[in-house]
Length: 119
View 1 (cartoon, rainbow, N blue to C red):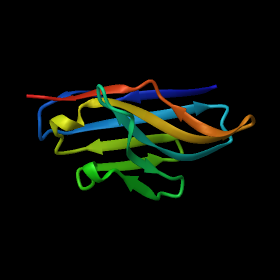
View 2: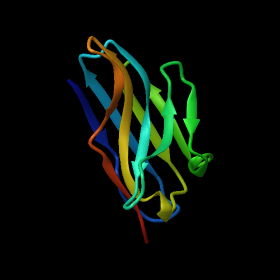
View 3: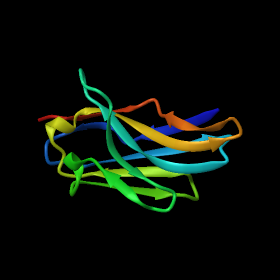
View 4: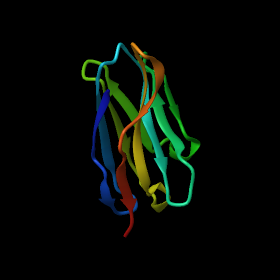
């Protein structure tokens, strides 16, 4: 079993900032990449940002220069600092984990946290 504790979503005005955090736990042998995806109403889930356990990052073009992902490997926690938020950033943000367990390696998803950017 893999558990996630996500926090930091909410309502913010355009141009504002939010910080998401996600702590993963469970019977996990290796934590590989962690990150965030998002899904807006009527759209497919899309990559926001990921970070490997070695610190390599990957960002969607739409968030480069505005969002920053970081990770605390001692706490198996990933953070997403979101600045200069736009209405088009409104979505449910899902924590992502690529993990190795005794049953094998696969992707895991958090329950999601709502981010709404509106005046």
